[in-house]
Image (tube, rainbow, N blue to C red; front, side, top):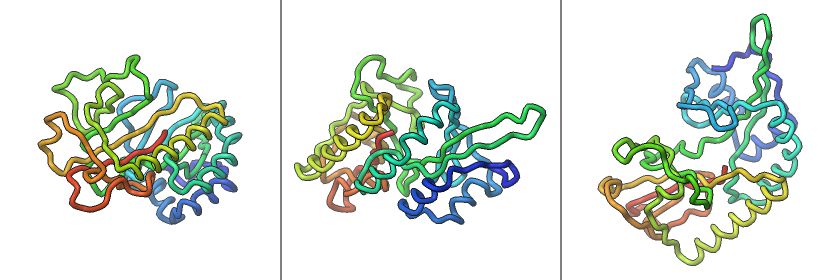
Length: 243
């Protein structure tokens, strides 16, 4: 929970505009971050030393940032806004706020953090989560097969499914990925990946290798539109976003 008395300093001019663009209700946003429910810390910090938290409703993810990272973020904020405004179907992570909190105590340490949308907040339970970089070096989970569950972050070489898409959906998806990668390249962002969340309507699929086609998978997240399927009779659903 973030306190209203924490002296939060928000970069509001652009972030408020982003929230309006993403149709985020201001009251719900504040309640999610500053309500009575405590934030949930994820299992471990990232390689950068950042810590990650989820709001109690799973709608927002909070990532701590170093001062240098904040400067880079602010530098690219206008270009980011122009990109997400121009491409409604962008897979790039949705950012809603950038804040700095001065902690109480003798040293009054400043903690800087960004508020992002949580891709895996869905009406459908996410059975498998993948972080895909298009690389094979070190791209397997450290967990043994018997310990893999729905919260394990799997990697490229752990992906034993094929997503078969109709030609039109594939072309739309590929075009958007290309546009998003061009944007990241222009901003000199090198470390990014494609996050994929998969929901199995038939839980037996979890235990076997399988394949998805465009009539059996649907994006159920606002991170990806149009949907990658035709109907609600599909056995599998998937969410995707670039992070």
